[in-house]
Length: 134
Image (cartoon, rainbow, N blue to C red):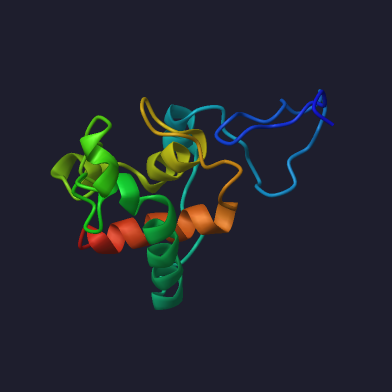
């Protein structure tokens, strides 16, 4: 069992086989820039979605981005400070870009492709929008 192929935490899974069809999303994107242009949020920003997003944000995002999205989480002392999610710049990002960043990761951020489902990623986007006052 020691010499078997496996995926380690924060490691990209094997690429899909040629001709494979996605099963969880109508369109896959190869980068967060592509997601910015293509994806539109299919999940209504209902109170239930925002609440689910808050719970997921606290689990997966708050350690770096902080409870209020200011980039002041408890791990910042050991890593580079992440960007504020409530800045004017972040407010201008399309939902697809935020989703793509969660899915694909960023310059210093790991991918949550395997950690969150499509729906969960959109719930986090909806929560971020509520945090931004939108």
